[in-house]
Image 1 (tube, protein in one colour):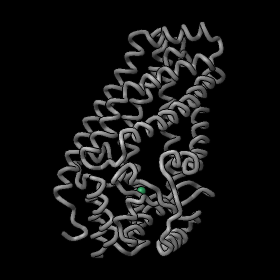
Image 2: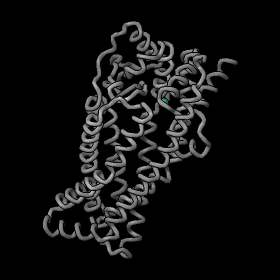
Image 3: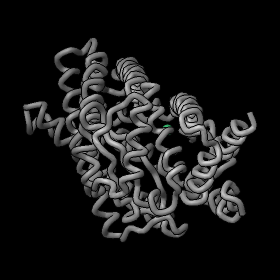
Image 4: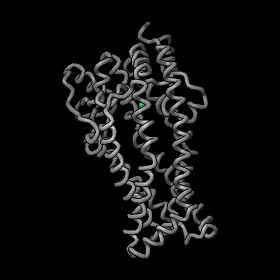
Length: 375
Ligand SMILES: [Zn+2]
């Protein structure tokens, strides 16, 4: 088998795995919708909100407690399905190296982070609903912008180390080669790091992390173990292309526009439905589950749109990588290995690509490299 041939047996597994994950995605959606609607329709939401508001006159406290209970309830409900999707199923396909306890520890950390950021966001939203009821969604969008920019800067320093250990890459030749590649792409990086991806998964990945002073190249140890320097260079060139094409600030802008549209829709819908459902207005805590429901439906409906945007930017990044390295053979080799190793479906059906794929399917990416070779 040549280096750029997909393993047919692995592809058969990849198809089955993808199909199972899609079904679980639907179960997850149904579960989320049932949870939110249960809060709304059983009157739990209204009862809890009014009791909290009576007991705690400070809206900061009543909003905080309501949100914590809502999110923790959802977290607990989701745990069995999350365990099956995130730990059990990938283990069955040999994609996971992490112990169950390690997985649970990661879930606890991610849950605590989600609770922390969710609490800040929702306290902020309800505060804006109190002080600027007409344009709260606009200010929330502005706050979201600031928050995303800060987080994009801080995530590599503060959040990534909660899950992985980073250390400087020992291979001096490869370090120099990758830093030179970054310089050719016009970006300064603060070193090349490797992280213990193999402690959790058999999948491989690389990234350019952080903005400005925190920018660094990171390589999964799984990548170092199995890929040639040429292939690693191709993968990194793709990542650098995102920098050259300004994909991080552009992505933030797109996400802010999307968030603004979602929040505006929530405002319109909550106003229209409030009196029919017995709410005081969009700022009524009892309407929170409806707010969450509308935002989730909006996210789901716009998912194909944001995925199409993402695939377009990813195609541009692939073209850059082929130009920058001039080595389509290494690019195709890296893509083939990734598909075999990460169990990625190379040729999904069109509708699957349309709904779920943030990147072009690997089959398309390999063909692009081959066409490049023949030019
Ligand atoms: Zn990319």
